[in-house]
Image 1 (spheres, rainbow, N blue to C red):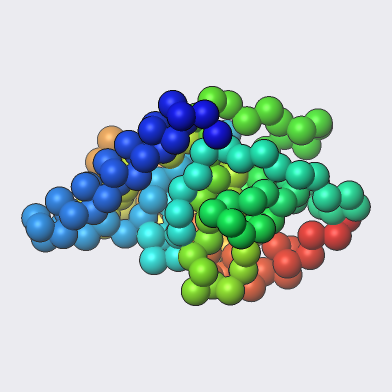
Image 2 (cartoon, rainbow, N blue to C red):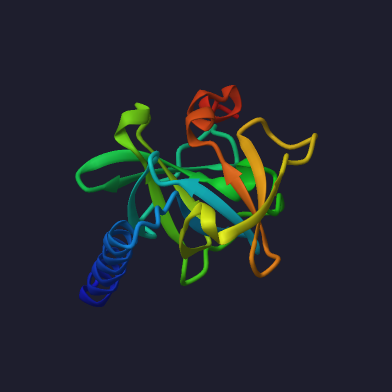
Length: 177
């Protein structure tokens, strides 16, 4: 990894840590890491999200589902990398989508017991309950890992992703093509 990428990632992690500390001091609780997937806002619960990494070198694994991108060495551990948008039916099915410059992988918290990281198009920031004005159930035909649909004060909709349900979802656990 280039020095500039390390510094950029370090700055991002320091900003997120600072915002979390500031939120705790001001009494505002951040509950989610907001990310973008193919132009759609998705909320990952902070309690189940792990470390954020720049896009690593991913080694493909043959005979796996199209959404399973392969494995990557992250902090000395081997993790499966999942194209979250494609897994959830938000991504293009034709060909491998080239991740943009803002793409990151978010490791799942070790407490979930799965060595996996999720490819996201872009990090948006931290979100707390006070930033939303409405909630509704997700679409009936959506995967069972998608929780409520939240609307923020600007009218943007955010889909909450239940990471605990994700690691128990048979579709997620079946990486064989």
